[in-house]
Amino acid sequence: MTLILFAAPDLWPDYEPHLAPALAAAGVEAQIVTEAPDPAAVDYIVYAPSAPLQDFAPYSGTKAVLSLWAGVERIVGNRSLTQPLCRMVDPGLTEGMVEWVTGHVLRHHLGMDRHIQNPAHLWQPGGPPLARARPVTVLGVGELGLAVARALQALNFPVTGWSRTAKEIPGLSTVHGPEGLVQALSSAQIVVTLLPRTPETENILNAVSLAHLPRGAVIVNPGRGALIDDDALLAALDRGDLAHATLDVFRVEPLPAGHPFWAHPRVTVTPHVAAATRTSSAVQVIAENIRRGEAGMPFLHLVDRSRGY
Ligand code: NAP
Image (cartoon, rainbow, N blue to C red; front, side, top):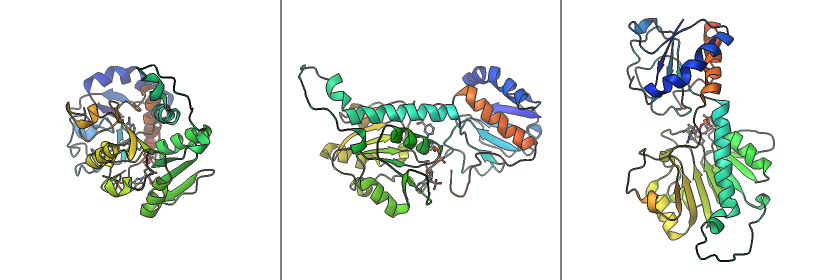
């Protein structure tokens, strides 16, 4: 069985020591290559969407393309990609996302900036309410959103989750669809966006939907930049309708120098660092999917191309 890795060259040294042992532990005998003279003979492609490969047609014998990224918007519409496409669902990535979101939510909840940036050395009494009095909405309750919702609930935040389809998740208040969005935003003091980028989610936070948020709400976006209408967000921040936006992802990355987000006093920019795929756990996911493919079992984490995620 031949597996090819298509990713930035600097990723290979990270994966090389982990991938072969993970495959061996899964009982899969594999030849791992980074170049394929005969593409039709490649069984599996491990793929980072930043890789130059765009034409998958020559890989006619390939049983699956295994993405190293959770978000697949860059390849899901690629017409030459007819092989099954699996996205990355990596426990290490999820753990990182939970930590990043929890940290940024707590920053805003506790009002940490007031004390960290206090050049006049003002004695500012008055602490925050308890988390139980700070409703948080998580847009998207898939792998990442649900883990984040659970972590915030463990800190006593009342959490509402919004998804495309109706869900019954024990202990979590959930809503769905356009009406659910209005409901989810109307009560939220902090909104976390963990939706995939699809034609339906593009600009889901726009002038109309942002207006449903209570005054002083905060947005934390580690999902995708295109989920938010930048101009509408800036206008809401300028008016003081929103207190702050912490943004990890942008329409153009790196965020161009001079973009208004960089200098805005109510915006925090982080450089797409919320949650990286973690090599040591990701190789286990890849190995398990290949084991399943070789055993004739259905792949895990298959992308549904019709819905785009
Ligand atoms: P996932 O498991 O596929 O979950 C996606 C969630 O979004 C699901 O709950 C889904 O609803 C919901 N959704 C999709 N389209 C919707 C719509 N039109 N209306 C309402 N809800 C909708 O994805 P994930 O693994 O949690 O990842 C989410 C996103 O996080 C990724 O796509 C990626 O963009 C981003 N991400 C960012 C980083 C970072 O470092 N910043 C790292 C990893 C991932 P259903 O449950 O009804 O299907």
